[in-house]
Length: 435
Image (cartoon, rainbow, N blue to C red; front, side, top):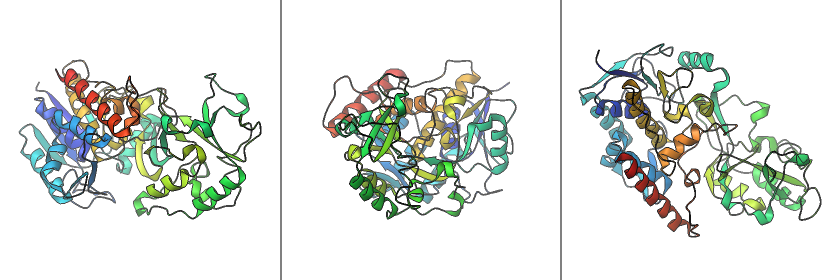
């Protein structure tokens, strides 16, 4: 019997998975429901349609996004190759003519002798056969319901996420480690607490309720429950609403003053390495620039480096740390691999990168070979490591950023030089792996 895999979804991740598998000599059936059925966001019949921005983020190698794309290029990415062919002027970013990009990827997929494209809607996960599921954040309702039925609470239908900052950018002279009522597990304080006095809090509150929010498409608007209320909406209910909510100081005492602060933002560790922290209870729909401006008013965050801003939109994604292994294989259903935003990676190229790895690992599984798990020093390895890290709690999607990489042995103060060193190390590790 000839080797064969199926890929569900013709977005960037699905196209990368099909391309990678076919280039490894395996016949691929790529199933895309357009034009039989469109989501609320998609308008074109072509594959790899860009539904929001036409920017694929920074191009320079000394950026996390640029490093990711270079790693993908070295692994044979179809999306990076096409994007570079149809780039448009965008300063330091790689932006594309969206129509030419989508059409270019479609042509390459259609011309590959080992790829067959079928246009039909898939309403349930297959029971057998190696399959890559890359149906995206707007997975059709029927398939999403089947995934939810199989994984229970392992599927989220919208993304209500708080911002994430790097640990090293938090001013610990204006913060302290502690858990409420000294309840902790680590012995060093499980949270970083960012206290505010009355004047600081009132200025912050005023800025928060007057900050500009992001516009949402109708299909992006989530059903907002009390437990995931945007911080700016809660703040609008009254001056003390968030001081009695996510910023409550109860059970905490500032060691610098010996007193309970007027208000406290708690930061909770985001990864096992302790290099990233999320702003507890600060899910938000503010524009990214506004988040930077307003949240930096908190004294301990005055120089904070945001590796991910808060978002609230429609985004079907898995509880990947519980459900997936690092090679993107489903623990409970090992004939399935998942890729794209459904796995909890955030961004066009991040989705494509996961598809590339899922396609290669689907082939390896088919052939009984060891999986390809890239080193954690690489951006692709770090992202797949993050979304499969069982120590991650309250999992939220993550895009490429240098905070997910292990730190350098020697600390470099200059950010540009540090990023350049991280990128050089990543590519060296990638070349070692490929050889």
